[in-house]
Length: 162
Image 1: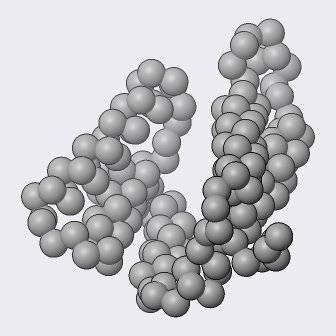
Image 2: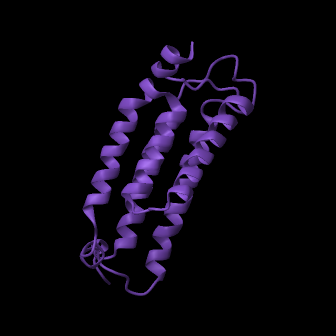
């Protein structure tokens, strides 16, 4: 029998399993508004669903890693790992969080996705712009018009839009 830490699929599934358990535990402590308690969809519903799905999938991946023959070790998997794109995406996420209140949901999200496409090597401008704007506008329409949620337009919109 091999060492637990020699299989990258097993270690990855275990990390996702631990994160999903923490996320599920945290989502159970989300307070529910008394007005929303009677309806089926509350502020807890989606986080609990996502945490449960992540838990089930990671548990399935964990057991599948034991059924497969000897997999790739962590050192073999990390040999050709590129760290710069990961660090770049982390910096982009930090910039997204910092600019969100100033630019608003639509502009900050579209700029983040466009920058991430460029960082990850997508050079077809028409494809990246259409995907980023299409996704952001679809999410904005879904969240604001269908679900009735408020998404901040940002300080820039309040200064120039009014």
